[in-house]
Image (tube, rainbow, N blue to C red; front, side, top):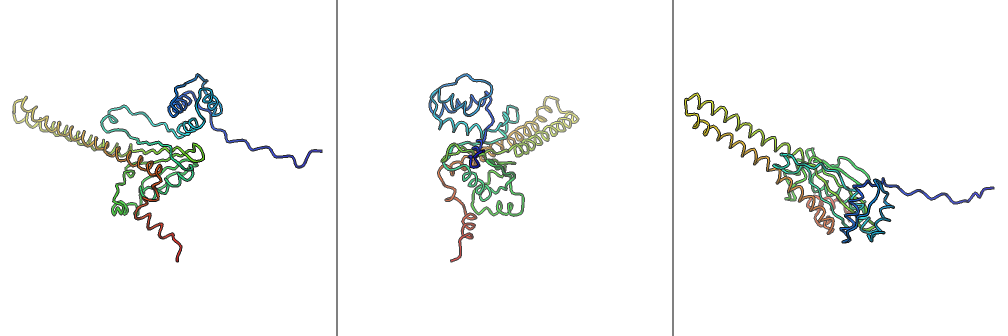
Length: 286
């Protein structure tokens, strides 16, 4: 007769997908960088995290730095590399910042979410277990906050079409945070405005040149005068497109400042006027 009190089988641990060769190389290289080592063993095309830990142990990498490198790899997002003329003139269409900060992953993600809603004038777009995406507030309240601007700070992230945060635990007291902002739409508007200005200059040059030729001005003189609107439009269009670089710089700064506040525990101290009023409203009556 079977024992009725036989123990239940232990639940299976959550299995992470295996790493491909490129991801393995990135993790080992990052772990070696964190520990100051320089080891890159040969391996197959796919490898599990347990196998990675064994390889790291064989080459003298500590589990702590391997876990941090793994967490950074898990937060990694494939951002398309931009090498075209638009990127060279106007700048990148994405801003990103990554850092390892103290705290639990769940608490850190909640703090970032509260900050984005309260201080950056954003609203939640999607929620996942370890990731949240936001978009600019579109309603009347968002416009009111940007117009009145109680805090006096610039809403840099409002220029982004989407802002996201991915948080993964390194251990019980640390987590890797990756912040991303998609500002391609803002860049496209500025590049289009610059292109329009350049096109207007080109058309103006053509019309002026034709008029000067009809007026029987010497061809060389007419060409010299007619090129001025074209040159002005080209320079103006270039400068308009280049204004995206200041947007990119502001968005990058905003992401880094959020990580600074996380790292130094400054979220509660910099809640701003609306945050202070909200906290005051939540106090129990005396």
